[in-house]
Image (cartoon, rainbow, N blue to C red; front, side):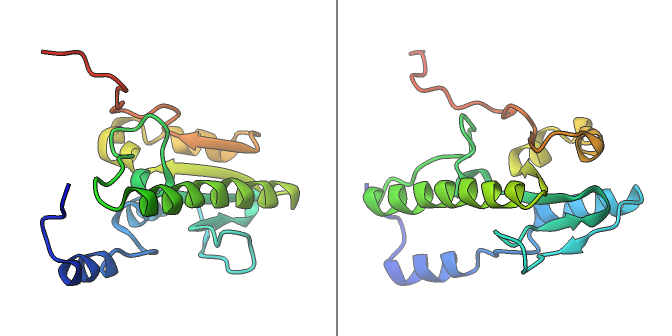
Length: 158
């Protein structure tokens, strides 16, 4: 499938995708701050430069986009139709890097919480579960535990 815009336009569009201070990240920050949690942002001394660090709870939080970080089974974790080999390598590399960085954080005694973008879009009624995960003893956890909108491998014919 051919891209619907030329490569120069696509490049400009992709360059506007932010790596930090994204809308989902800001929503999590507002929610936690309103509930009295205090945190540091983008701690450069920790592997993966976590979006939020709660030193009191020895917890790092990553707010992941489902597309970029390959949220398994999620409706938003699609693969582009063009340049398939490039995107497969890029997105699979992101997932491998994420796992490696999570392991490094855990080995340093940090806990890791991953908050998926789809949860912020479709599960806001359950966002208080994040507070429970902050105080839980789990070393690695994610919210939501299952994607709210699941991509089916073989959709049934209509």
